[in-house]
Image (cartoon, rainbow, N blue to C red; front, side, top):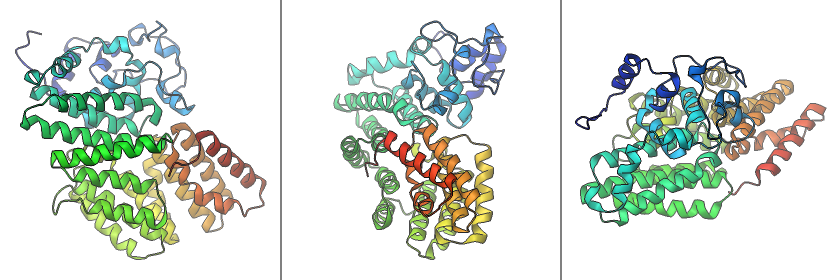
Length: 431
């Protein structure tokens, strides 16, 4: 309070919250998990006054649809201050799980964010001149970039896109203000990490022009900052938006930006993606690449490396293995990888990842002739893609669509019609 010390430890916030017996709204404003987890119902009755978080219009959020259910019905959270939310999520990083992010988003309105004014006052002062830019401001901006990368895989793209572009504009203003060299490279690096995410999100929102513009920004930032690996992330995202040889070449291009050593999380990601694309081309070398990816992942520290590597966990690695073996038609390995991927799904409600995993399992079931199971998993994949408003998830159903088109079963025809209808609703792929 006196301004003589800066709290930098997550544990300190925990001790302060416990010592003051903070109510849940105050704990969540600090980015801490509530002491009473929310009930697993879509709509909670207001039974505990201490747990009520007012929304902008004064209606308790506990009486509204939760953020998780809002995502489920395809609506982004209302009135969420995404910039502040991203900063808190990035600041706490590995201490913040998916459910806590969603709970915090439910109460992070413009009004509640206003109580955390100091970071943004500092940023406002920094934007008025280079003389006020300091280490603390840089760290806050870096944390916000990490937060946006983490929010991308739990919220629909349109829920965070505007906030992300505002964040990039603020970074641009600071870079144009002539910051000292010791800050300029870090600002350029975090701008590049934010821009490559914005490019991916713009693609997901069917805005290829803006996607290409942000790609150019990330390339410039990679060069300016001396972090060419930012380009690796850009090309990896591009490979997700392509198919066949085009996707494979994008992954190979991404690998050109890897350093000789280090950055093992990005390395594991790219090796896994290369394995997927080689498998899709019928190349058995994909199995060797999976082994290399596992070795790299064993050395990796996803939460310590890059803003974009936070997504890489054992569940995602299992999903890469499943996808690769499905494309190779290796039934024995598909069963083992599928079980591992399903175990990850049971603990993770990330709709974008779930959609991809279920689509791969559906494809495997259809390949071995189990039409009923294939349809069931394809239905789950479609549902998850709709909830996450995920073009990427829907794209993974393309192969399933082809398999369903040959089926005479009414359930298969109904599902095929729903996939086509959803594709029209979300719009054609911009790839």
